[in-house]
Length: 80
Image: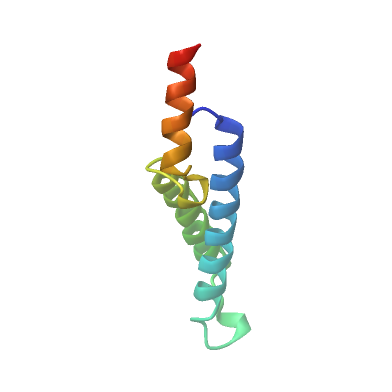
């Protein structure tokens, strides 16, 4: 991976979305607003964000480069 800034931005956006989705799902499990365990929601949401970032290390589909572009880039490197 050559561009860490692009990866960090994409992984960060994905982690933020995961945190929000986890918070919404966890809040939805409470029967009444007064029964919401905010500490558990924050903890579960942050843990989901960390797991999302670690999963992103394996790769982000939105950053995949077309195979032909990779081949062309390698050929250009060889020619230089």
